[in-house]
Amino acid sequence: MARRRADLPRPHRRAAPGDRRLLRRRRAVGGEPEGRAGAARPGHLRVVRVAAERRRRRRRVALRAAAVGTGSDGGTEAQVVSSAAAVEAAEEEVGVKRGTLLPAALLAAAGCHSQKPAAPPPASPPARAASAPDRAERARAHLGAARDLRARIAQAEQRLDPDTAAIAGDAQACAAEAHQSWTWLYPEAAGVADPGAKIGREGAEPLYLEAVCAAIWARMQGFTPLIERRGELMAAFARVAQLAPDLDGAGADRELGALYAALPAYAGGELDEARRHLLAAVERAPKESRNHLVLARTVAVKAQDRALFREHAAIAASSGDPAVAAQAQALLQRERDLFGPAEAAQPIPGGPQK
Image (cartoon, rainbow, N blue to C red; front, side, top):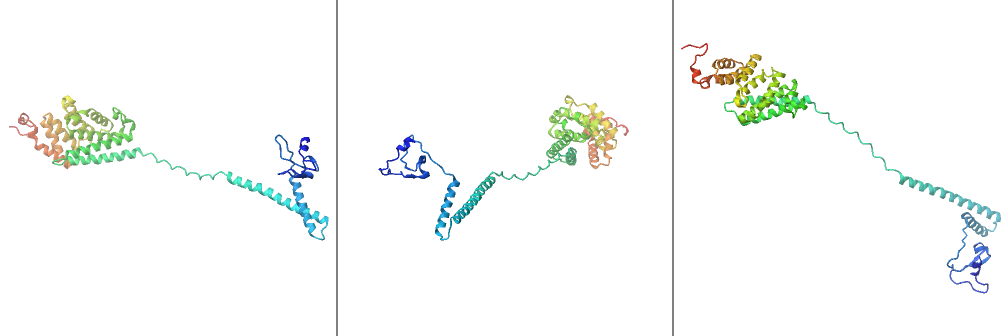
């Protein structure tokens, strides 16, 4: 404090100009009764004394109480002290309230800001996946469409001047519908070299209709497509003959015999095989007029067997199916054109002898 005292002016000097002021009592630095503080010098340490807040508050309360006491004539020192204590208690209460309310408000504000956003409502459970389509139902739908197309083709073929383009289009659509039908039943058979080997009895009719309609379409295009597809057609008809030999009036044997008879020899056509399959069809379904008609129109004419021709053409002409009967009668009327002169000159078995 030696250097600090040196800064104090001498008694005969005036106070230093500027912010220098007289420090009295407790405000004096170092506890001196009085003194003057000069401007701070670099490197000097100033001692600052901070009074407690309570002490300052008490002092202010005492001063206020003293002011109140001096203003009243009958005020005594005890009243001053009591009023000072009351004021101090009131300030203490306000201070307590302030001290408690402010942290509470801060905590509430912090709580409001720190609250997590409300969780979104739980999402509704996902809709149940649509059940897988019933394979049997899909197969039946495609089979029904193939049947309708096959019936329309049969009606178109009975006309005097059939529309070959329309028949070919219906035949192609029929084959596609039938293919979809057995594909739904036997998906493992799709895309293999021999699908008939993987198709069971339930898929016999779709396989049969596909082969029939494909053969009709090929014939409408000419012999080349029929020759190109003869392998798969023969395999399909042979498989149907194993699975369902009675289907469509022994239709598998009937169509297989007609295919063997229509193909030329170099493309796999065999007249003996055609005869065998057609006779098997007649034997299995003797009341089916189409078997007799196909036998007379294909094998009998190609083999120039007049007796076979007349026998089965007559059976077909007398059948209850008007379409087949009309075709058989028209076939009988063309007998002289279908058979050569040598065959026509030969005596007809059972007929008049010259």
